[in-house]
Length: 145
Image (cartoon, rainbow, N blue to C red; front, side, top):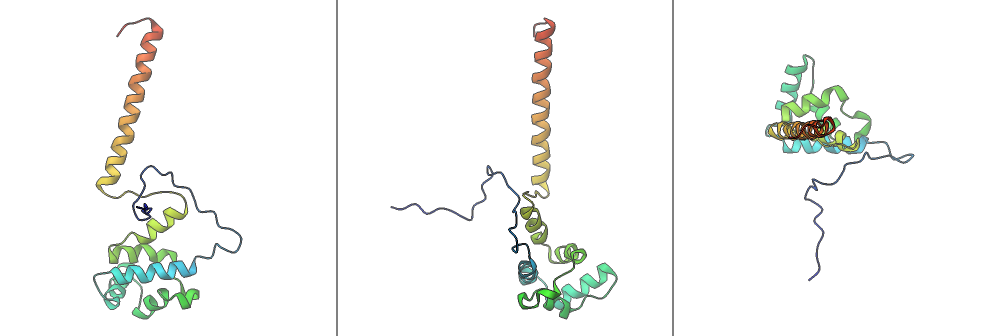
């Protein structure tokens, strides 16, 4: 039986590295349009409601037609402005842009309890290192534990 490599499962031990674009490959306009389309497709409300909520939150007009242009890979000259991406994520309850950008830069994002658990683990390791260093200092001073 041949083993099939699982390409979908996240490898927690893999060290993320930034994606280094080669000359001519750094135009992400089509990817951004596809991201907008994916976020809108997965959103629980329709584009009219997304536009209305974005308008309400930003204080200026965002129309359904703007969302359509931003999500069209054929209209990459009409990409979503960077300052609008957090609003789109907020209204659609998504982290797609954040995750994508952090992935490009070689990182990973943790949200909510996962972020707290990571910080707890980091501080636990710091505390264990400090205790080890203190034991070593006691040995150097000639004191027994």
